[in-house]
Image (tube, rainbow, N blue to C red; front, side, top):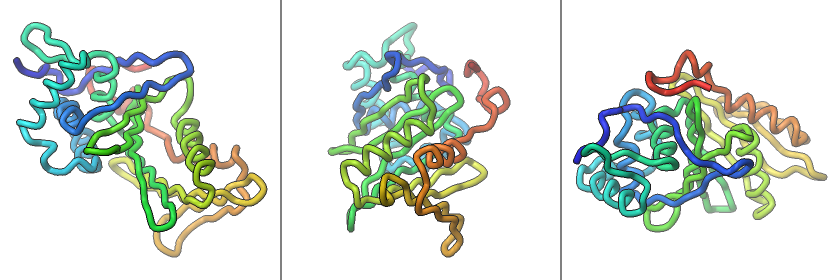
Length: 234
């Protein structure tokens, strides 16, 4: 049995109205889903995903397909291995991302991180967990990328008020950096950093202003102009 010859997965995922779809994947499963895509976007995803060179191992990829099959996240059809619903959406996002945002959380001397991938038709947040596993949250289309990131920032700050959130967001052509921490009296301390010593800082940004910054940060090109062949447009 061989994986589908379609090298750019089409978008399909089940999300309940108003909710994001969240599930866990092991390193082998992520490796298999990454292997389904080819091209500059898929190569960039493999570059920024902290999974190590072993993720391209044929044995690990085969183990990932087997694990997904056992969990009902892929199916066999005409001697092909085809991702179903959520797994297919994750595979599409890995292969077709146009923007990659590293979501770092500084808590004193510790650093936690997640990776937010935006494709023309879908976005997903990848959070590393124990034993090289990942929690993956597929954004519900009822809200925007900026709204999801704002909620993640609010959750982080509410759980650890002294923490600093760092967003390093890049496409194939550009990069932008944003630092966010809680200010006084319910405002935000926000800095846009272009290079060391060159920053724009607002120590009293409102939530609406922060959302506007995130909207700018998460902009994509027109999907109709940049989406790979075979990917449906909205």
